Image 1: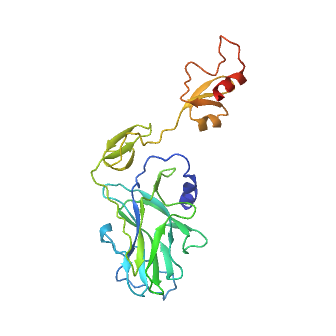
Image 2 (image 1 turned 135 degrees about the vertical axis):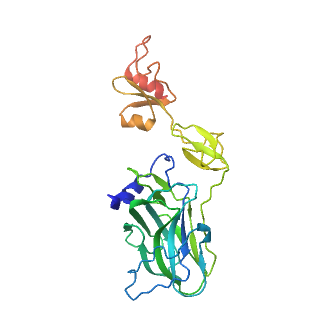
Amino acid sequence: MKKTLLAIGMCCVLGAPALAGPNAHGSLIIVLADGVIQCLDGGAGTEDYCGAAGLDDCLNGLVETHGAETVVLNVMAAFSTFANPRLSGVVFGWNYDENDVVILATGACGDFELPTNDWPDSGAGTAVTWASPQTGYLTDVYWLAAYNYYGNPQLLSLAPHPSQGAFFADDDVPSNLDPIADLGAFGFDTSGILPCPFIDDAPGACCYIDCTCEVLTFLECEGDWLGAGTVCDPNPCFCPSLGACCNDFAECFFVTEDECGEMLGFYLGDDVPCDPNPCWPDPVEESSWGEVKGKYRN
């Protein structure tokens, strides 16, 4: 079941945005395992370099190197100390110049990996899952050994998976899929990018499932926090429009247009009420059901 978590879950990220899960606002970073030398005696890819960076604080991550030597890099999920992550899956990709950057070996740090056929090429992607949720503020996701062939300034940039995007999944069934807020990059003979998550006490818009909005801090918000400085006027929360939906029995349901279509009903329009029942012909004048449809279609 864990093997298909990302493959199935990521394909279902369609339609309205969901409320934030426990892994919201997290980043995916790529850092240097400083001083670690990869040994290929056992064959490329047979070693385990998960945790090689020994990172205990995102801000201490090293994101650049200079010279032609092979380096070991760790891809890590990073969360604010305000968060309570429950990480069961990650899906991501990367981009780099294959003429300059050479990747010698890679390895996943989870219990199962589902890569694209062309992984670890530039533009490819992979998914990593764990049998038990990872709850740390820093979690090793992947490792790789690489070097810069010509010494030209190059970036190896984390990116969305080519078809599944960039998401963190939790251990709920079905999983909550939180978009990865920021993606890092490692610099070969240039500066890298280290997007450590940080959420302060600044207030922002908090959206609830009923589409109401309050300006609260991240810790106060029990819904979907839109970020520091966001406001509730105008209401930024996703609010599906509702209206009267008539079925063939002249029953009325106050639902969205999509829900009405699933019921094989006829949607009379946004904000059209069901009381009084608009699905019945006007008792004062004789009207056919087709005429009622035509009235609201206009």
